[in-house]
Image (cartoon, rainbow, N blue to C red; front, side):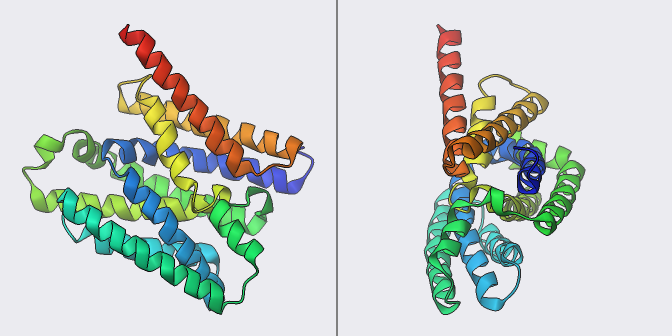
Length: 264
């Protein structure tokens, strides 16, 4: 399996993606932004379609659309009801734009499927280089903001006393999340990326109660899901996205059972 270059690229790419999911997934769960992550994955599809239409890299289109939408939603305010309404509106508009751009680009339906559901075995060396570069950049920014993000995410009562500071950190986090979605979507697709960004972290919180412990477990769960999913996809010729989503779902189910047994 590893004698093929595309499989080597896939394993390397999924390693860096797992690191991103380990860092960002814990904050996504802590800040209760799973719904927004799912919306960003849909907006990412629109950005990729725009990239195809404009003749630029789909990942650049995804970055453009997701970051712009994050800025727009982030400035709406911190009230949950207002933010959820805004997310629903932006999601509907951007999905419509994605369909329009894909139609105007006269792209084949197979390419649209690739955008939506991912094609990790289809990435080449240039894709891997871009993915690694963007991943390292996001990781550095997250590490630099780690203390502020942790305080803002896990101490909502304390951080609420400084509204302007809270809004600034929230917008910065949404931009980082948008960038993460854009980077990782080419592996499992724009529709399923939220599975890697939410499910492993949701499972990790049942096994560990420290931020570092949750991040480590989230990384390991993501890495196991992507690597084992790649192996199963190679042996069965079934979509890798299906295996990744299923494996992460099983891990979450095990975490729920473990938590239930621990309580009893």
